[in-house]
Length: 276
Image (cartoon, rainbow, N blue to C red; front, side, top):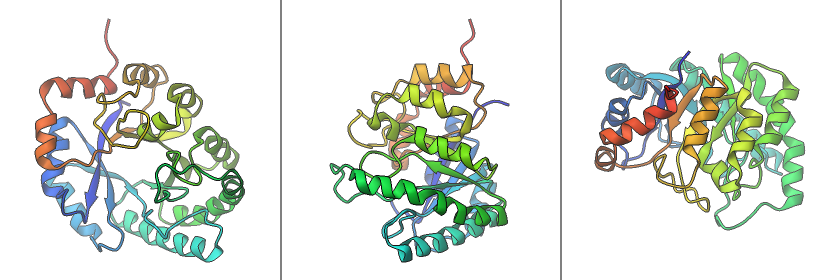
């Protein structure tokens, strides 16, 4: 099975009208979307499904809500309960669109993006995380979903160590828990390729974005310092068959200016191995 290009479909954000942004990604070659709606926006599954049918885009996944005060591994038990309740609503929303995957953040960002995790709090969150996944599993099973745990950048209290999360996923040994790999987040953490090599067998979706290694700028792939050529070689050598999902938040005008024919060829190089 070939690698498929996809895109985040952002709904409920005035600056990114999906009826204008999604056609740009479709014309780039995207076949799937990962639907994400602003928390509390009330965008219905039917609205998204109708637009995607019109554009011939398959709704493969959703991105679960993650805005504060939601926090899956919070010290406060009530916050964890409320987060689980929101994720259960998201899972039902995903099922109405016949999505197969739901991407989940293990913690929210700090307001100060220069702040690093407190080691004790990070350890405590890691200890709570298995119980959080146990609580999520019945929700995923009920709605016929696979949870994709996403690696976080360093300015989140927990979730930056994708190799550790992969170890936990292997321990669960459930088809309903896998990983979503975010290239931009991993580029900030550092040494992305050795980490990807260790976890790729568990990855079902990849968020594609770039940066300079210091901040999560969500640049277009090939516009920062992430090692794209080596990444493509690794994907093809390991026969990766999941989706590559563009996670770029540009206006329609910006997208049309950037998606030139040379850029389309660069993106295509991630999907298809070079022939010699």
